[in-house]
Image 1 (cartoon, rainbow, N blue to C red):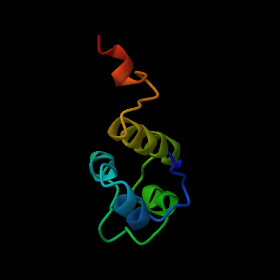
Image 2 (cartoon, helix red, strand yellow):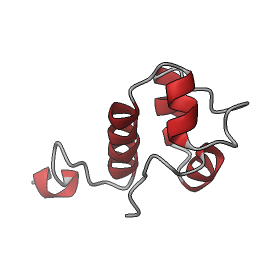
Image 3 (cartoon, rainbow, N blue to C red):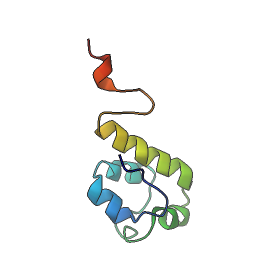
Image 4 (cartoon, helix red, strand yellow):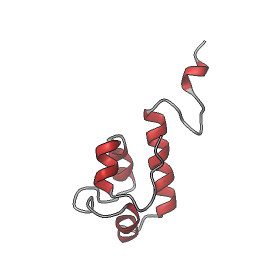
Length: 79
């Protein structure tokens, strides 16, 4: 998995990982008009803690890929 970092362009992240749209919306980060800018720039403008947002984005991608850093591999829990 490619790690999402603060200097990535929002539109690029959304194109590659559409599951992140929900995170941008939950944090009220403009992913439409602000989508052509880096995550850090838009998050700061919208008053959002960049580090927290980036962590949430990466968790969303991990969950979508079936591997969550917080809950382990869901496939391993199936018995």
